[in-house]
Amino acid sequence: MNGESDAAAGIAILLWASEPEAPQRLATPFFHAAAAAAMDMPVEIYFTARSVLLLQPGVAAGLRASPHHAKTVLDAMREAVSHGAVLLACTDALHAQGLTHDRLIAECSGRGGAVQFMARACDLRWRTLVF
Image (cartoon, rainbow, N blue to C red; front, side, top):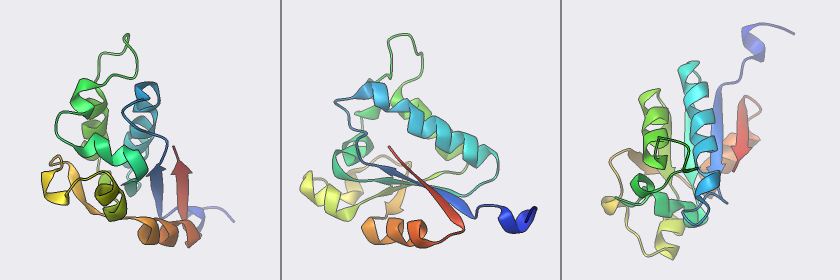
């Protein structure tokens, strides 16, 4: 089969091992998200575990994937959002890190955790990536 029936309905990206302590791993998920969103693909990025720390004001703005890369992690996140990607914070991860949803960066669209991501993973029309 070829054509539209083969097209993915969206891309769901789970950030699990993407945390502030490993900035060298932080730009890639957002570059992939921006690329997919720029191709008019719905993109949802789920922040879980310690990756929710990136949603705190000031954290991603102070991180770079490499000293040779001009963009901050926040720049990469904003680029993905500007193309249509949606940033979602796991409520349980927020709680585990002592954070509340009302104190996150404006680019975070809402909450989404294990149930929402697993619904995407079980939907054969969606593709999933884990970073």
